[in-house]
Image (tube, rainbow, N blue to C red; front, top):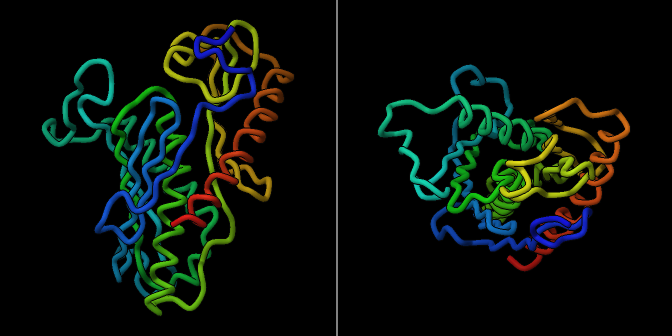
Length: 239
């Protein structure tokens, strides 16, 4: 029995609220169980210096966690004067994941930054950030097209992410903190709606796990992201 009482292949309750950040070109507050992440897209009419003259746009991300997003207060990274290695790794992952489904030539030379701020953390914050950031990015592109800044929507697909793990010998989908902290193995899958794999991060926490178990996790991840893709589309339709 999972701590949450869910079936092994069940996601936590998921909701995506668009337009939560009133001033951003696109925003989405995503809730996956007790995890809540606010994703906001901001548009700039320029690209980083290394891309000037390339004709390509740039999509990047920043990730942060509020001090009381977790059980105990964490220091603000701004107060420490530097980001942690974990923060840098996650925001690079979010940026890579989004760029995998964007036609950057169709964007033209502009930058879209996705700010992903964790309001409450209960496991899977990076996965929620990627899934919600795609919605915010799509809304930003819709806004730019409506304003005649771009001729076509540069998205070439959807991307979403979900965690899976092996808990008490069984493969399970969408780990919350209680499961994640005690899992035998955990993995994050970043997948596209076309069936592509953007990134897989998998780690054995105690002993190694078998290839057959990894394939079980992949099957679960595909089921979970298929549900998330449908929720993303529904969020855009209702925006």
